[in-house]
Length: 322
Ligand code: ASP
Image (tube, rainbow, N blue to C red; front, side, top):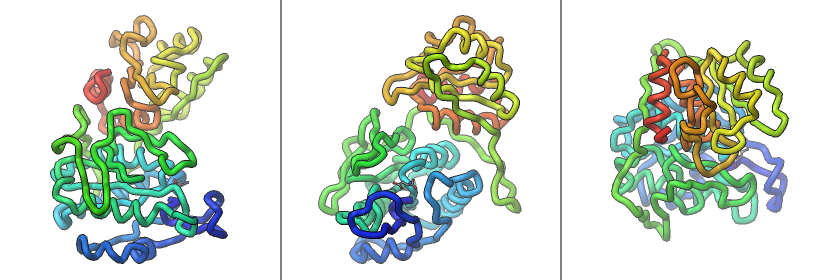
């Protein structure tokens, strides 16, 4: 992502190319050698809009294979989809006490006041710090430490680009890592066991798409989607609200249909699902606090594990209180 990018000149903060290596990034923070010993591996070098399942599984495998070897792991990642990868990793790897820290930047390396080097310095310091143990997958950006499970990118441009309504876990100031709470992991986070054969690079996850609701939404879109996908997530207008005609189509669906929300805050409670949706005769699920992109990953993982409808409902219910 941007953390590994160069622009044409020092005032450009858009339209840049991702081409720096992890070695280049580490060269920009020589003082880090006073904090810990580092080993690194270049798994890929892409804008995070191009993250696909193959790359996701490379990261999954890279982390899984390193759990016994290191005291902490840092993953540099584009900020656009960093929260999705962090959610995927928290949902699929039992990290034990090991800190896994995701980090990115909003300004390219060539820009005046580039934020990448300090963000990376902080992320490595956080991963190396024993106070970070037992906290699962973390995101370190802009001096703040957050749970990767909950965090969302909320600003497309500014340095203060991430927000977490469940609260920041800590802060980084002048080489010190400060946590506000004792070690804690996301409550109700379902851990999926991926079945990956040692000979294949990964598995492909079932296809789930996201539809964004709006005034005058065409209900036939819902039916069209079923031809190609095994599940749907809908970003509903509020706490589960959709036009009646769209609700009617959803009640007739034969594939899991998650009601999530367009808004960043709040949640979709079961009570707001269309009448009849709380019975076992339909396939509608409330996303709770989960946003559409994280709901999509959760549903993909449930489908990959061949979970029955009641189990899928339970996974969503446990994660966010449904
Ligand atoms: N487009 C970039 C990415 O996600 C944005 C960033 O890293 O800040 O890869």
